[in-house]
Length: 188
Image (tube, rainbow, N blue to C red; front, side, top):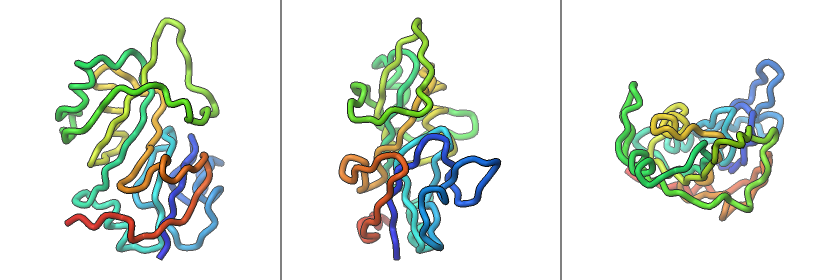
């Protein structure tokens, strides 16, 4: 059984099949019968898990077994304490209400690789960085949450999934490594 950590670059699709000439996982990983355990949209970067074990894939991705995920998010405007409090509380996004999460303002990460292409910069709009930790993961949830409180996402990087992080397993965009599958939590 294989468990792969992959640092997904910006604009790479979370699938192995090519689509409209866009980059996909197949451009970076050449391991037969391996599949993503969860997704990141093309506009997001960062850590993904892939496995060749269907039961493990289901356990990692199943809503009842969600591993905590931490994202660092560059947002437009200043992430004031009142906005962070709104992010942390259950937030009605129309089609669902988020679970409480952790959201803290952080300094711009000095170790973070440059994005290609760079994010748009507006001289009249400040930006700030937030670390958000969720134990759920609906489609484009972090982007929808920050927009709902008036902090549109400019850049989103998933830093960790459960016990794995880009801090403990440093990978540059497009790099991957195999890790022991036993390290994935077995919460009931």
